[in-house]
Length: 162
Image 1 (cartoon, helix red, strand yellow):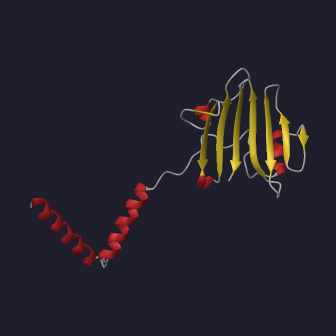
Image 2 (cartoon, rainbow, N blue to C red):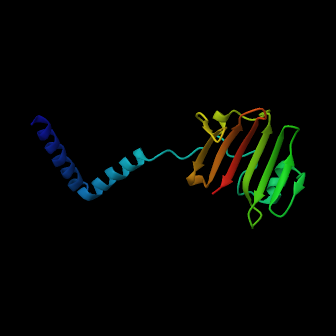
Image 3 (tube, helix red, strand yellow):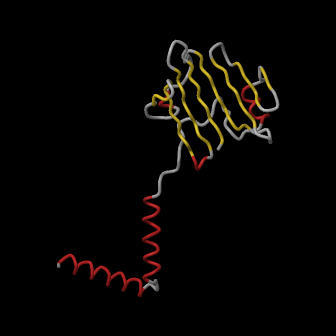
């Protein structure tokens, strides 16, 4: 009963304040709803890993080559770069010659970043490999980390435009 009286007094005071300051109770309610929506909105997506040596999906072929140099092999759809004995990168382009996919392979896992700095969390066992994919819908791309198991270990990190 005491809480009910307190709530009724609060509502009456809110109505009085709204009336004195020329606000409608509807405007006050809308403000409260807007504030609650803001407070409960998810944080903006912040990917852990969004580019490789400055290259990310959406860049033009010219921008990619400015970052990675002259490709070892190239055709109308992709560039292939040999970075070192253990590291290669492949960039696939869409019809407008913008990077759609950036995929990096690390032979033996040598030089590969730790999966937690790329996709966070733990990897899952999938099709005989350790794997995780994270989608960044609001940013328009996904990233995956794949580590093969067995005698030949290859770590592949793939960034792809959705």
